[in-house]
Structure formats: C-alpha cells, structure tokens
Length: 272
Image (cartoon, rainbow, N blue to C red; front, side):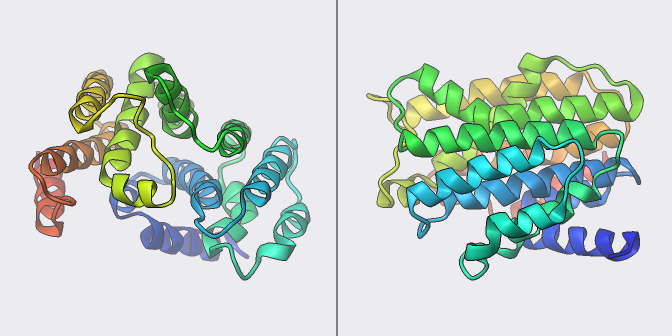
C-alpha cells in the first residue's frame, strides 16, 4: 500500500472510530498528523480488544500481551500481527486487525516511541483484564486511568517535543488524558455496570466522580495554557473543550453532548 493510499485508509478509519479526535487530527500539519493518527489508531486498536463485550477474558489477556511483545520489536513484521489475529478475523473490528498498518504509518523518527507506549498500554490493559477491572480506591482509579489515558497524554507530549521541541509538564499531560477518560467513564457508566464493571471506587457516587474529573480537566487546561499558538494547541483545545462540555451536559442530566453543541464548540475554537 503506497503512502497516499495508506494515508487515506488511516484517515478513513479515524473518521469511523472517533468523532472527538478526527476533527483535530485532520487539521494537523503533515508529519505531525501521521504521528498522532498512528498513535490514536494503535491505541484504539488495543482498546477495542479490552472493551470487547463478547471476547472471553483469557483471550483478551493473551491478545494484549502478544500485541505488547509484537510492538516491542525494533522492526515490525506485519506477518507477526497476522498470526496474532488469525483466529479473530471475524470477531475483532477492522481497526484492531489493521494494527500493524497503523504502527507502520507513523513517521520513522517517532515510531519507536509510539510503539513502546502502545506496548506498555497493552500490557497494562492485560493486567487490568486479569484483575477484572476491580477498582476499590482512588489510587486504583488513578492507576487505571493512567494506564489507558494518562499515558496517552504523556505520549502526546513526547510527540510535541519530537515535532518542534515543545516542552510540557508530564503531570498536566497525565491530567489531560485522565480527564478525557473519566468523562467517558461517567458517560458509559450504565453500560459498564451492565457488563459487570464498576470504575467508581468504593463509596463514590456521581458527584465524587464529577469532582475527580474536574480536577483532571483543570490540569488539562493548565497543560494547554502552556502551549504556544500553532497546530499542537489547536489539536489539544478541541478534545478538552468537548470533554468539558460533555461533563457539564452529564452533570445537567443529559446522556451526552448534542451534535449541535459539538459543532458550536468546534466552530468557536476554530474562529478564536
């Protein structure tokens, strides 16, 4: 697959899998766009394994750990991914089955960083599946949300530094990713409970999770306030604003942020 076809396929998959991230990624400059799209799609690929409601836990653990080993290779061989997913072609989504394509789509000078971060996430996800996502304390919640989202904020910081030397605070970067994730936890609470998973620490109610999420979104706000004007800031502002808007919609008793509100937020940010 040539680069132009590969790029088209990646952006098509991105549009199909994320309303939140497709818009800011599609507006990134060449090079940076490929790096962030690759990172997002790789992590979405393993996220689909962790979240699959029909895949037995032992299969999830096996697949995630095999993916972690695969991504730790200095040079990726797509044939190894074919072997990993051979028995799951009818059950796993396309974004997962094409993991090797997304990994190889990344610019070569930042690819090892993206692969290593995705490998670490896959291994961490396997551990959480093994624990049946049991979260008892706020520290457990911190550990889980770092594994699946805070680490993404750190990876983005590494990508910004690779792109133009931008320096960012890793604690704020973690809060940026963690805040986006906990908005999803609140939004998906009903579905999670139906599948027997409760991400709320013992004794926590919605207000406790709202407070936790707001603290992390505030760190995310501090994170973007340190960014200079340009494509990196433009990228980060949109998902943060959408997450904040979604949280306030949930706090008001709505199930999600309306499509009209999404478009209004994006248009406001694009014109400012």
